[in-house]
Length: 500
Image 1 (spheres, rainbow, N blue to C red):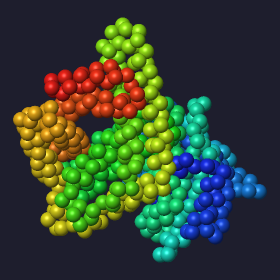
Image 2 (cartoon, rainbow, N blue to C red):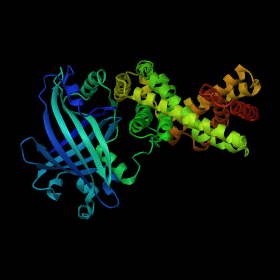
Image 3 (cartoon, one colour):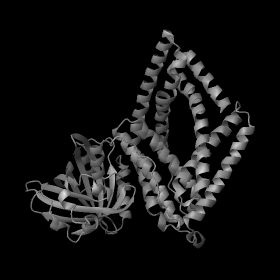
Image 4 (cartoon, rainbow, N blue to C red):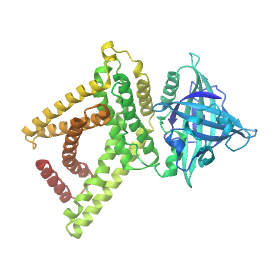
């Protein structure tokens, strides 16, 4: 059986597996829908060199058992498709097989020959990892007749001796409009904490297997074509940036890795930079209000401040301050312990913000807005423009703004509030310039773009290091840190600001 799989994945932050089923039953949209429970075991296959993974394809065997019944084995082959964040659209071919072994006959009539071009690939397949879940299914019918399968999966992923929990909600469109998935998700998110989840079960297994489960999601290169219509390019650029933000938020839920926090903030800044870039396009199709995300963004910044303090700023000045003095060494160690304790408190607040229903609902509204972007109303004049000319003009304007701000900063007294404000503006514009140029470099003049990127990076780095030191003394003062340490750090920061 072949079909186009269209589904929206939702993570369940802070979920209690013992009560989540009852919480779903209590939702107005799902109340009264008869649940069906299944026990699923999925075995994922690939070649030793991960040929299928590189081709963005998935081949799995599923053991499906319902209460009181015998297990059925289903072979599923999936191919790459369009992905708008947590909303995925993929080709899917399923067939019942007689035993827990792959059947090459079940791949007939699928795109498999395009992957196994010489007919030698199937013999190389071997099990790579497994997932086991208890799935609770409900069928929801929207007012317009759209039919959605609501699947609650509680279980885990096992790969190479490693194991991680798997708690998620899948909304799969069986019939009707893809936007109906977002409508139902919004109903759920208004009442329960959820987060859009762009990472598939298969990708979770691979990351567990290759040891990258804790790794952050960094910015990815976009191969934009020069002739791509500007609005379609906007969707691709914004989607990549929002994906970086959302995927790192999911990582923060499970792992205490400072780089996840950093890359989440980078993703959000890149998103804001791209919104500025495409602002003329969005006058009649404004993005949703992000005010509900403010507690989350503040919590991310609060944790990042102490990550920078403990991992970057303080270590480089420890020897200079201590200078072989035992009392100073004791004061420094006391300060480091206070920093770590405060950082722990701030992470707890961050997790609380991620588990707020308002956070998940706001993120889903952004995903929904982005999914509909190519259908937004826009003028014929804009419709005729390709991304290359648009990008060249907008980035030139941004570079001119940065140059003007740098000139004003150079003419200002950096010891005054006005001078400090100029520095702050230059740093923000330098970041925006770098993010925009990196995202669009495939369609921009190469040499000019490289030169402007280098200038923006140098500005951001030099100003940032000095400002981080000045912020550090402000952060540490409420923790009861020894006055000598605070004075030392303020002196170093003042010297760096003057020098830079």
